[in-house]
Figure 1 (cartoon, rainbow, N blue to C red):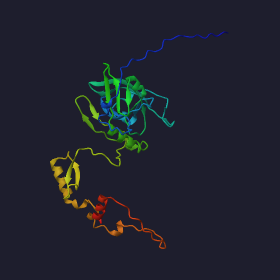
Figure 2 (figure 1 turned 135 degrees about the horizontal axis):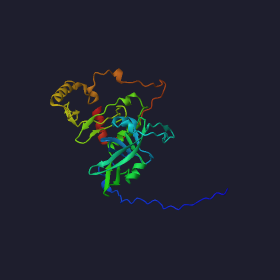
Figure 3 (figure 1 turned 180 degrees about the vertical axis):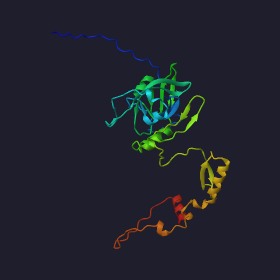
Figure 4 (figure 1 turned 90 degrees about the vertical axis):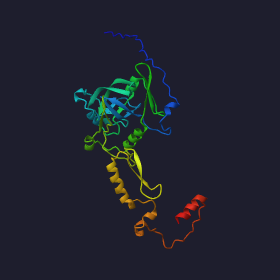
Length: 307
């Protein structure tokens, strides 16, 4: 039996024609130039405004984390089977319940664009709600500039749409990602705060447990409350308090003003045995006088004032 091989000639796929996309110094507005923050934005998904959405050019898939999916009130009947595991950066395989196709909106009307995106559902504890990977970026024709923390892509009318990252949220997500623990029951019992608008419900979906970082940012705007006699002897209270609650809080703070310490002189009641320590020095050691360091005039005056 003779076998014949055939050669078929095909025409190459036409390239998508895209308008020019440029970044200028104007895109630095509102961005700290000394940063290496990730591109974290907010998108509209299933009529929810979902924050903590990571734009990851290194991801070959779009990821929707399972705790976030459950909070979006999407029927689980839309989930399609996906048998292949998702392989992470370290080669670790991650189980996925399947995938789902959902419409997502980038930007705010009228400068926005809505596309259909396929998300892999992943059960993992993370500081992000969604990861937008290369498939969606290519579908948008998007260009991401991490120095500007800006993503640009053409709209349906050819106009270039810019989406800025939220640098503060990006820093919070990065800090939280360093402390993420394995997925547990706390992650499943998180509450979400919803604010209703005319067209959609908006929430900051956070799949993680309610963990606070070492220096949390205040939620409300703050007012200074004078406690001591000097100008700098103040504390801060929320501006959102009702007049009655604010009056009660100020009265309670001023009634306990002696608990605030502004210098070591405000702590005379602490025993010296408690705040002092002893040095374990060999008794036969020879004493050596340390040379006095030369200090400037301002520091010398401060030393004299303290002693």
